Amino acid sequence: MKANIPESPTEKPRKKNDLLLKAAFEECFHDLLRFFYTNADQIFDMNRNFEFMDKELREIYPERSSKGGTRIADLLVKIFLLNGKEKWFLVHLEIQAQNTKAFSFRMFQYHYRLLDRFGVQVVSLVVFTGRKNQHQPGEFKMGSLGTEIIYRYKTYQIFDHTELQLLNMDNPFALIVIAAQKALRENKIPEEELNKERTIIAKAILANKTYDHKKIRKLIIFLKNFLYVENKNINRNFDIVITELTKEKINMGIEETVIMLAREEGIEQGIEQGIELGIERGIEEGFEKGANEKALAIAKQLKQLDLPISLILKATKLSLEEVTAL
Image: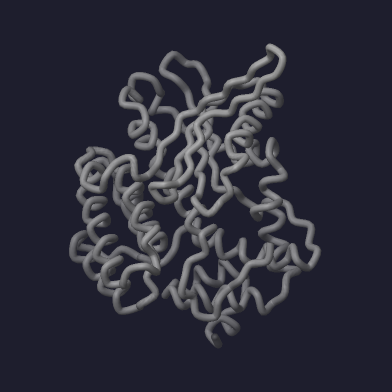
């Protein structure tokens, strides 16, 4: 898949939204469980670390990774129950723009491939992040001559709750759901209005008493990149509001996900030139063997986001002279 990197970005590619949302789901996975399971703290061992199993997910569905780039916006997480038993948890993010015709069968493929390869049953959850009228299949059925398969999984559509209901919930994950609702309005409302809406979400995040400074900082950065505003003055005013609310300066520049997204743009260009990419190997070789002008285009895009030069150098592996000359 050829990546288009605009000279002056006016719209964030849908794929970037998917991956940023995936990163937010990972960051708030405790609260994700509490959002979907009211008795989560009586079921899951929240004190044990979650294991995010991207590698295993790619292994059981390699054809999806090859069609969608080097990463897919789904989560496979190993968690533990309070009774000590291990449970694998699949969170699938289904985006409105995707074709849902064979979606339920794909969910069934996830399940039986994981069962066949690893001998585990999977708890499946689908979060539909499209508009209210989005097709939301929740089961796969197949049968003939007395043999029947019925596979059902838990589903949630981001408009199942209103914005007011979500704001009144005592769960930070509800704020990510609101952000997903607002993201569908990008390029359909003035940037000033979009900024007002993300400021409301930011204030709710900052009012949360359960997250430490590091996690709050990551969520604010997610919000700024997820609800994309091009206007630098609007972004600067947003930063000022956050600074005033926190009584300190929060670096609104970048986190690991944004660096990864920039690298993927370069890697995908490398694929077009016949580079054989591995997951980690691809990150290194994509820039090494790919066209230098692609790295420069990525650097220019990151500079337009007012990112620190040191992080742009880290993301693109360009020299300081090359970046400062842009």
